[in-house]
Amino acid sequence: MEIIHVSAECYPVAKAGGLGDVVGALPKYQQESGCIAKVVMPMYRTKFLMENQWETVHKGYTHLGYWWFNYTVIKESTNKLGFDLYLVDIYGLLDREKIYGYDDDIERFTSFQIAVVDWLASWNHRPDIVHVHDHHAGLIPFMMKYCFQYQHLQNIPTILTIHNAQYQGWMGWDKSHFIPAWDPWKWGMLDWQNNINPLACGIRCAWKVTTVSWSYLDELRVSANGLEALFEYEKGKCVGILNGIDVSVWNSSTDRYIENHYSIKNVDAGKLKNKKLLCDRFDLDINKPLVVFIGRLVGEKGADLLPQAIGDSFYYIGRKMNFLILGSGFPEIEQALENMKSLSNRDFSVYIGYNESLSHLMYAGADYILMPSRVEPCGLNQMYAMRYGTVPMVRNTGGLRDTVIDYGEKGGYGIRFNNAIVGDITQSIWRAVELYQMEEKIREIRQRMMQIDFSWETSVKQYLDIYESLK
Ligand code: ADP
Image (cartoon, rainbow, N blue to C red; front, side, top):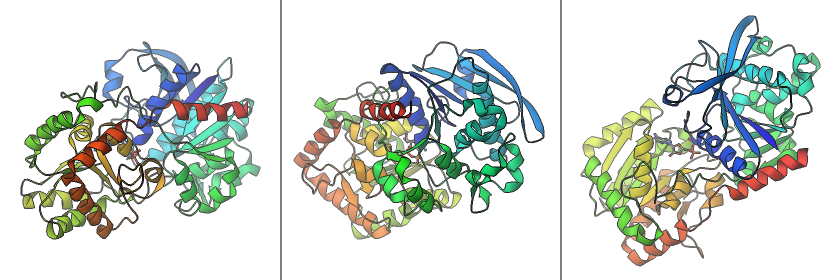
């Protein structure tokens, strides 16, 4: 079976969050299970691009509305990721340093999608499945069905995986001419509340829709940034499949970003060595539990609650714990956290920015990882953390609900709280401090967490079953 994944991110080529991790891992494990899995993504100007070898596989000429452009598809020559990786180069539009955040993102990702479909249309054979990820590829199922020049692709099954339904790629109807000539009777497929909504369009036009956890799928029917009714209407074709984690990258015995490797046998000593590195580097007290936050500093992740929750914890519980934050996002949140540095008594620090190697050290050296998310489609951090023996403190939502059981329950291993509010976070920090005193208990929890199977095998099988059902 040949599967083409279309995505805006893929680790290690370009990653801004969980989407990159998933698209970097899923095809690799699909390939191992005997499928042919390929990834096609935009050619950004990344380190990976500069450091690897490429061959040109296709040159095409197509248009975004009235603007005609050349595009080139290049392929990584050595197959070093374990699957074929293709990059689409559109001069001036995609070859930029960042993945997102430009004023012309709509033009960038719409032309990317047009180029991908145009390239697929030129193939001599047909892939078995086109698997698109998030709104950046959400128009592809529509184009394959309803754009006149691509209608010979309409029998290829398409799957849309939603990693985050908050972002939908809206554009005004004044941009409808961007999409290559399409059947005007189908305008309703593109429209959601008087805008073109690529995510909604993907949900309607893809043959099957998956979300990255089953609880998230349930939640989308009541909270989906305006698409609730659509999720309710289309529930028959939606399935939740929990992400796995790439255990070849996220393995505390071999992790290339950390010096002090450890396994389940020496987890306590191993974690302590890594904690020491963090405490030395960020001037923290190694004798106190270390609570970390890693992620985008946005409301969705509950990051706006951190300054007050940390302040309240110091005030009400006492200075009995350390906090270390890694992330970037809203300038107001970044500034509020930076300001708190001056109040640190060797117990608070923050690193503003994206830093892959520091994140690995934090998973390895922390005692707890805090995730007070308002929305969490799957969440990978808690799974990485558990694999590294770090106890997750999570809000009871989405994938966090599906992967973390409170240690107060039978067989549990994490700390769960119900609301994304300061009071609940502070209370869970109090519980973390209390748990830290119970050395035997925390040792047992670490052992239990590190044995949980979060590998991709189960999810790969579930995706395969869906593909098979569409053939
Ligand atoms: P998201 O909603 O951001 O995709 P996920 O939990 O699915 O959240 O994935 C987050 C991924 O991004 C994890 O691999 C996490 O370690 C990584 N990450 C997030 N922010 C940073 C950062 N500032 N530096 C390094 N890694 C980060």
